[in-house]
Length: 138
Image 1 (cartoon, helix red, strand yellow):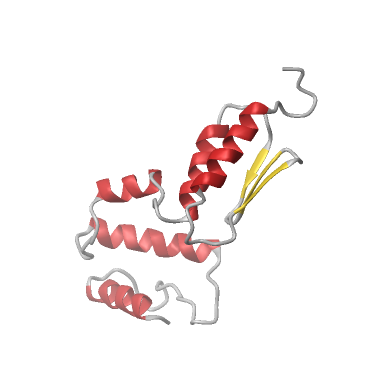
Image 2: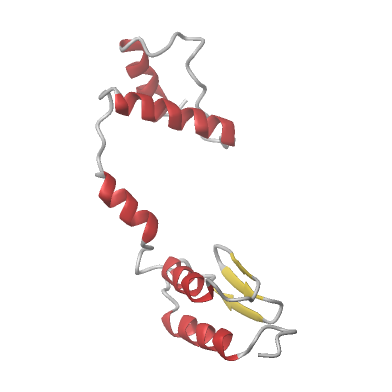
C-alpha cells in the first residue's frame, strides 16, 4: 500500500469513514490498479473532500482549464491542434499518444513527448484540408 493509500485510510478510520473491511486495497508498486479500483479511490476521495477532510491543492478553475488546454511545450499541443482541425470533417482519424492517422494515407509521428511539432502539425493540417478523403468527389 502506498503513502496515499495509507493516508486516505488513516483519515477514513479517524472520521468513521469505514471499517477495516470497507477500506479499499491500494496496489503495491508493481501492481496496476484496475478501473473498478480507480473508481473506488475516486469515490473515496470525493467523499473525504466533500466532508472537508482533504485539502484540495488546486482550485476547480485551474483543473477545468487544464482539462481543456494542453501543455504548450509538449506533443499534447500538436494532438490538440490536429483534433480541433479535424473535428467536423468527414475523414476518419485516430489520434494516439505518439501518432496521428487520417484515413489510411496520412500519418504524423509524434515520438518525442517533449517536442511541440509546430511545423509538422501545420503542414499535416494543411495537407488534410487540401486533399479530400478517398471516395469523396469534393
